[in-house]
Image (cartoon, rainbow over all chains, first blue to last red; front, side, top):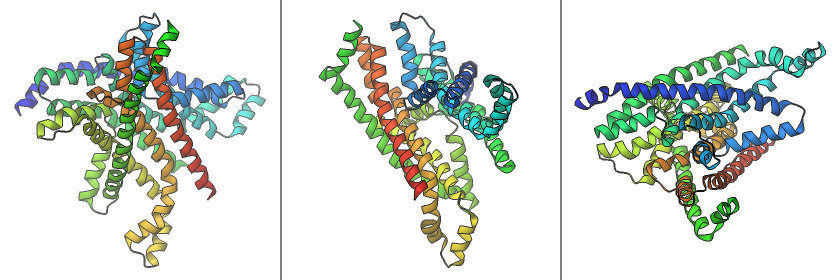
Length: 217
Length: 220
């Protein structure tokens, strides 16, 4: 019990770590959504060149480890003469990695909307982007939402890897607290509970959406 | 200058150093895949059992483990388990963490496969006098396997990528060896690109294999 009191006395550190985890996840999420939409559109347009670029992006980033990508930005940017903070490098690495997955999620959603919808929108005088934005994407959202939420869960989990490049997120603080107190077991269990308070509601929400979608179709 | 940073990677000594890391990566991946397949099946069996005292713990296991960061589990198996008297080497600490994490996901994939088989198949088999186990093995599993193989392969690709996390406890697998290499020669861009290509070749081959199996099964 004494150990738990020690652990709880560090709750300020835990919370500041949790704040960084949420901040990084949020920024990376926004960026990866933008990357995902662009990549998905590349993959469904009629241009062969853009198709190939989109496919190459997805294959490359899905088939190489996140930690290599994060290291690339963190250790590679000074070598290229750029001066970017660890937090920014980590967010960027997390975003380009998740962007590949988001791209596939969006593509599946877009392709699930019948072709006639695009043709109808185009024949009523909308340009490609208007048709995409006003007609296709709003319908695709329903299909996209559950896997998108799952990707958000992955994002929060994967953000723990940024502790390896000295981003002071929840994982980093946990490691510090355990080397500070020499308490390992309770310190890690408490961190696990904190992660679960973020990820479990999200993934429960994703399951709920998925079940609703299955019932409606 | 830039060219020499590439050339140095292909010196026999450095190439051999990276290949030693690759060997650890492959061993980690293979052992963890085998173990998480086995435990995934066990957990799935518990998860779909008729008995609540088996079903609920399995549910809790799956939902909590798959919602945790993998590196937290690696830290836990390496640093926290010794506190309760379980001392594991770096390799086995990593394997145990990967297995705990991936078996939860594998269990869900297997469950998804089994539950996608129409109930009529169960009823038909049972009414023909098959026992529960016979129905499972001879009727349900062969059909469910087709649906399970693509998501299982993609999970194993993820696992192969995730073996790189073992570097955080100092296991010298491919990513660990790469870090030592680029610190020594100050060529992070070149080393990381080369290592990314190695991971890519392994995983891309696996995903193509997965697609091939998928097509075969769709035909057969």
